[in-house]
Image (cartoon, rainbow, N blue to C red):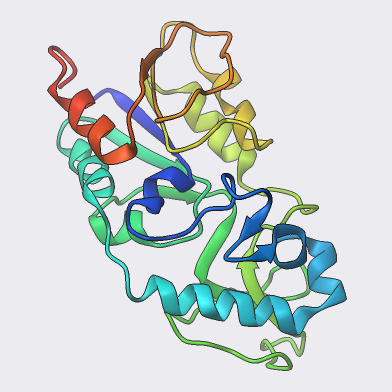
Length: 228
């Protein structure tokens, strides 16, 4: 039976594909204030701006490709029972071949009803306009979990982490909750690897740090004796 491996991925994985992050830019994301375009308050205050922002991100996503980190994570399925739990809203894990993915913060290629995120629809890389309606007559909105909203898949993610024999934390600073708390669900004897080029906040567990960007770090991890 294959060991269970969980990948906790964040923005640093997709950054090498050319997708901008906001964690290194003083709260700006593509020159927008994060709270204007990634919070429920921002949606209520200016939904047209929010829709335009995510239309632009969707168009950008159509023009980038998975990088070696995404591909190597997908290749882990040859050796382990892998689940990717990602904070990223892009589809690069899917496009690289990973088959079990939990998107904690939603999916950029989908829209939903403004009423409790019902009627989820995959629109790929197409745009939509403010005023477009879902089948229930509610406004369409991006299928994104914004600041100020519950993270509905966090409990499922915690249950999966609790079963993991191996955990790889990659491209995330472990600062954004509730995702940052997932490691507390890990078994005492789980092997934990953290791949990130920057200092990551102290973790009250014994972990193996690889201080590299995602692509280099994944290659280094897979080459370590006894990992595969």
